[in-house]
Structures are given as structure tokens and as C-alpha cells.
Length: 163
Image 1 (cartoon, one colour):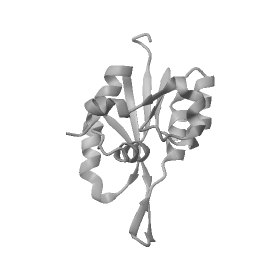
Image 2 (image 1 turned 30 degrees about the vertical axis):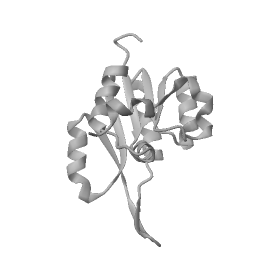
Image 3 (image 1 turned 90 degrees about the horizontal axis):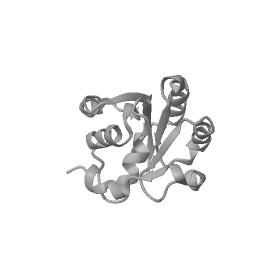
């Protein structure tokens, strides 16, 4: 890939975070940002997450690590095992990919969520798709058709794991 190729990453933080946690480790988001820059030349990395007021310190850390944070308001609701917080970022991620489309040459989507299948296909058809980074092998079967673009984080555990 030419060095002047502008690459942006669009990261579903919840999907990536919970996906690696399901394998028994925690992702070091600072190392992940460095990996994206070094491996793919990612100029801008948009990190999509539900906003929780108590997490301000985390948000500052992520911004200092080089992410552009895109927040979704969260909804709190009661469940049998306590209060759950939901902040589905799918629409925000898809809209940002499309609103930014003239500003980058290639895109990386970091999520194993099949809801992004149409978006990923659109990027592929318009020669904008570079990679789809998934957190584990349990990613949506809807993404299987993009197998040549898929990069699984699990083999990168050694370099991306929080110490």
C-alpha cells in the first residue's frame, strides 16, 4: 500500500473489548492504537462507545492514546442481576464511516458484529475496505464472505494484552 494512502479505523469498542475479554484477557487500547498506526498507517482512529459520566478518566486516557472518541448516550435499565447499561454505537459508527468517506482512501472496521455487513460490503464495492478486525473466532457468520479482509486479534494477544 502506498505510503500516501490515508487510512482511518472505526472501532466498535464494546464489541472488541468484550470479545477479547471472553478469551480471558484485556486489550491495551494504547498498544492497539500503536499497532494500527505501525501496521496499517492509521491516521485517524475513531473509537465508538457509550458515554458513562464516571468514566471520564478512561476517556482522557483514550484521547491521549490517540483516539477520536465518538459517544452514544447510554440507557440504564433494571435486570434480575442488577442495573445494565446499554449504549449501542452501530448507527454512529456507520454514519461516521459514510460522513468521512471522502477524507480517507481505506477503512478498517474493528468489530465482529454482523450488523456492519452492509457497511463493510459498501466499502468493499467502493474499494475503500482495507481490513475487518475481529476480537475472536466467534464473529458473525455474516462477515464470512469478507474472510480475505479479516484479521483476528487473538493471535496478537502477546503484543496487545494489557500487562
